[in-house]
Amino acid sequence: MDEQILFKQMDKNNTGKLTLLQTQQCLQKLGHQFSEQDMKLIITVFDINNNGLIEYAEFKQMLYTIDNLKQVNIEQILFYATDLDQNKLIDMREFKLIIQKLKIKLTDEQSTQYATRLGLDKQNFDYDKFQLLLKIIKEIYAVAK
Image 1 (cartoon, rainbow, N blue to C red):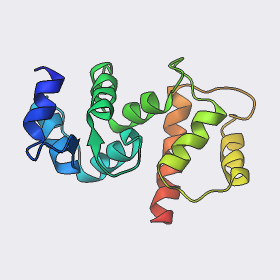
Image 2 (image 1 turned 45 degrees about the horizontal axis):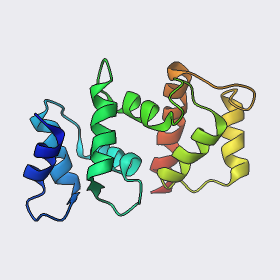
Image 3 (image 1 turned 180 degrees about the horizontal axis):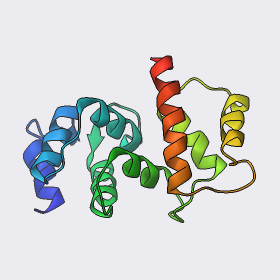
């Protein structure tokens, strides 16, 4: 199904924005099932202007990310959404962006400490190390709520 048609179908009020539920329903129509918690995280990651809604450009980026994954899961979505330079590696700048995007209250010093723990201060890291990072982020995120 064409992404623009799908977006317009789900945008019943013609606001140009989709709520979490509408976005989840779109993904379900495309055969993707995510928990409410994962959907909140997906919205947070792709909501560029931080208004809590998904606009068409954000929707396109979200579908691009999901469509290009071999196996759709939240870890891969976060990895590819965070990999802004699309080199399949995460660097310190991208690490700090995801921390900010998830609204995790960490200072630059704390972010650097977590990154150092994973060896990120000296190199970029791949999806395997990102999974480790995600575990730490989820622990931090759960505490920060």
